[in-house]
Image 1 (cartoon, rainbow, N blue to C red):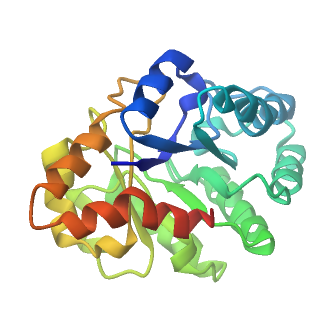
Image 2 (cartoon, rainbow, N blue to C red):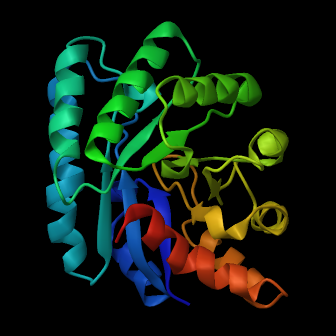
Length: 254
């Protein structure tokens, strides 16, 4: 079955591994901007965006894999200086046709700086008519997610253009009735295949996106495909087909 990884950092993954995944059915990857350090200047971000948007297009074309770039300032990657310049870069890159989303953005601790940066970026995404990949943290998830939802509401950002990512059973009651999309990160430390399967059964699968969130952290980029196979063999075969391709294509307008 062909499928799209709806949130990854596969620009950190070797081409040989991506080729194996492609041969197994992976047809496209949403590459969200993130670096495993806090940048000291805005220039780090502009180089990252050029890598994700331009260099990856060249690299992935060699194996026939479709890149779906997203750019933004991750809450753990807010530069220690030149913040306004960094936000100006986000505004410029969001205008580009090849950039399909703002992401990965959100809150980690939920401090005032993170809230300010998220609010500014949501306003830029709304002006550019781009959907958002919304990070939620591992720790203090409920409290921080409540702050995220308050920011989304405060700027009147359309909920149907937000995917609440790294969703798990802890926050299911907070989000299941919302009009957002639901991002399931099938990754060690976030969701197992079985945990993801259970959530799909409870959610509106017309608005579920699955991803590997592959990065420098422990990752199993084939786990989303295992989830799709498990769904396909169950009474949820329709959900499998929608989650694999239809939902990400609709959300990212590709």
